[in-house]
Length: 227
Image 1 (cartoon, one colour):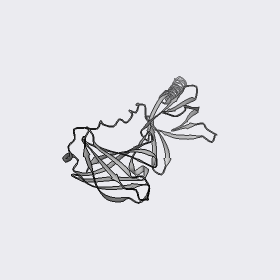
Image 2 (cartoon, one colour; image 1 turned 135 degrees about the vertical axis):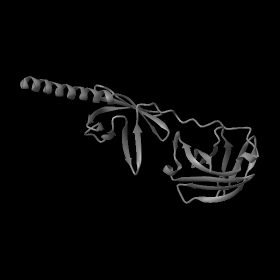
Image 3 (cartoon, one colour; image 1 turned 180 degrees about the horizontal axis):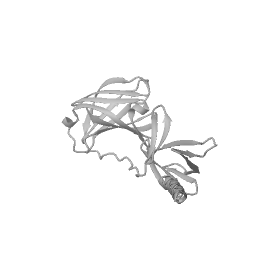
Image 4 (spheres, helix red, strand yellow; image 1 turned 30 degrees about the vertical axis):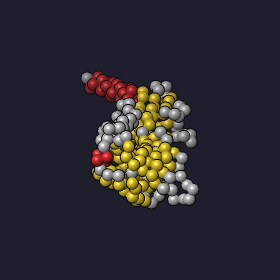
């Protein structure tokens, strides 16, 4: 009887280990989604140990993967080797300096800004506003991550704007032109013969505010919230 029980116990343990290994593979194979600076990245882990990585406007990348305990290793032994921490429901890529990319099973909805209002009145702009998101070159990032600062204090056509783009912020007082529900601000160039910076300010249907401009030959859209 003892021998029989021992055999049954051993068989049960082997079956449990086998089921655990099978479940582990089933947990990680398939598609995983993350948002990288507002753009969706998808990694598809295939059962044969290969993967496909896709991101909008980028060429797809392929390689191999394996699960080592709680770590997913991609392209092991190569210059492109990457390790992601796996906790059973998500995978996290540590980029250093407090930056992480988290992959989950749920598809990531692309960022869609609220439509601008054309019926806004000048009085509705009044108040304090601070930037909560920056959109440029197809990516949406936090202003802190980009080292950018943007805020506005609006009273009628009088606007006090604080702006810092990768350098010490400046605060300027400007007079806005109001037409068709939008404000237009002109920041004179610091250099003789240089181009002035023009800012188009609009209220959005979700209660926020957008500020569009071109700097460093790139288009920037700042999204601000009322303080």
